[in-house]
Length: 357
Image (cartoon, rainbow, N blue to C red; front, side, top):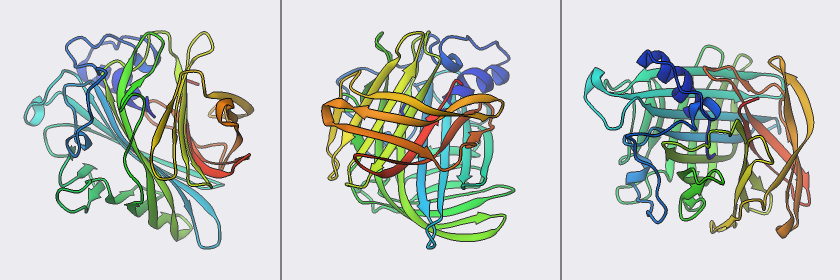
């Protein structure tokens, strides 16, 4: 999302342990803490490509976040996630072990029966992890997201994505069939009534082919993927306790990104309706209405795993179904992330992320 996941672990767990200081507990995972010394998003700044595909070390947190809805030839459904997070102990970059940048990678594969998860953590400056804008490359250890686009073209248009862990792995090829999509006000995405914000854009139009490696063997898959790019320094208000984020591929070819940031009241919602040809329609705060319709016991807690999502102004009304209730990311800071299908006045597939439960 968006305000997406694991800056969390950086802002709270990872940054505190590496710096030897107690993390400030303001907002979920410390993401509402003060951004003193760091750059903060400003309205009216235009996104720059391909430069913005690369890192922004003067901002505190950032991610390259891929989710894929996949299907085998026999119709079996799968989900895959590849995410690289950057978090800064201080603004700016420096060489080798003096770098203040910390990197973390998450990879996952979801089936109807299992949810496989792996995590990597690295210090910046020594080549173990990083991102280059052009020619595009993102990596942590041997987990790779590598671009093959021609010079001068969109560097995210053609990607190879690989990850391997003890029980699973994947090799995926992504080809964009539509444009990059900014969220909010031309990429300036507001996250609270108090004005916290991030820079946020997506590539929601990937066609995917490739293979999964599972304990039962290799599986050829194809499907759709969604890549989120987001960076900020203080994306949450101090009273926001987590979020529910949705990316939906509608059968009509349209897309929807929406999230709710939870607080002690009704929360703060935002959404972008994306036409089939890639034109964004940012919806006003409150236009998106979401409500849980079923919970399940996951990792010892009750998690809402099915949702009703409504946009009354568009007559949009769907209910989601998870591929696997137990899509729990048992990482440094745990969260729920998994593939869904949905039905109602339109069908489709997508992904849900939930933090703070």
